Length: 125
Image (cartoon, rainbow, N blue to C red; front, side, top):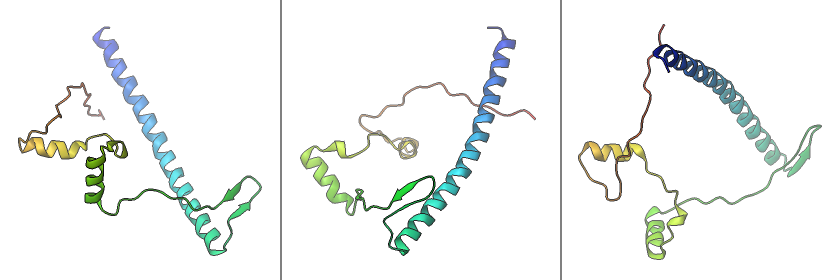
């Protein structure tokens, strides 16, 4: 590719990114409205002691579900180590925690710095 073609590619990428971010902003706003309506609906069903109701477009049912929550991390970590149950955890590093340790020149066994290419940019006015 010529430098001119690469420059156009950069502009095309920038335009596509701007469109995506504008769309995301609209989607985020709609998601907030959806979340507020869902919370209001849930509260109304609970207040009126209704477990199921249908409108013209949808039938909704309020049900009790159980989701895991940790009350004592030390006990959980002990259990995981004793039973080799690491599948209970998500396997990903918190990049900010690793970066903080690396800034202090601490080594973390089993962790290395993976080299990636990343674009940096500054918008022209």
